[in-house]
Image 1 (cartoon, one colour):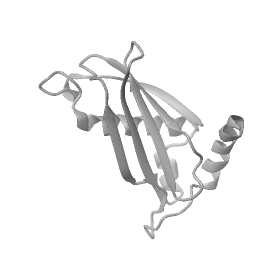
Image 2 (cartoon, rainbow, N blue to C red):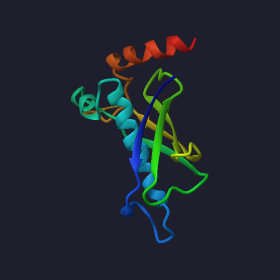
Image 3 (spheres, rainbow, N blue to C red):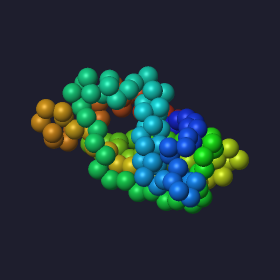
Image 4 (spheres, one colour):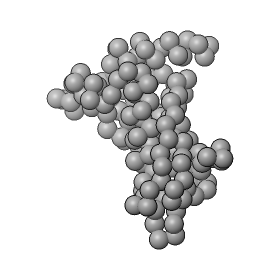
Length: 139
């Protein structure tokens, strides 16, 4: 398992008329979490794209348990539970408030794809090698 956490302060533009975070923004929170997760490995999406690989989202599921509100400081936890073996990578996301209450969970599936051919490909070897170390520790 490999996880990363980052915090987001909820600003007014993220809320709806009820004063809670609009549900559509959670996909952005997941995206921020994945970008920070990659940075924890000393990579960025830009680095992956420079390798000729793109990572489109192909599936997303979200469960809303409690609302996040204006001025809340939320923690986005991004977890890779399984090391990808082929073209698919699945991220699990958990969003917590400052008191540690779980507000939201989500699972996002992305594919590794060759940017030129638009065909699925394996995870870049350099990224897989870095992640393998964390999964060895889990066994």
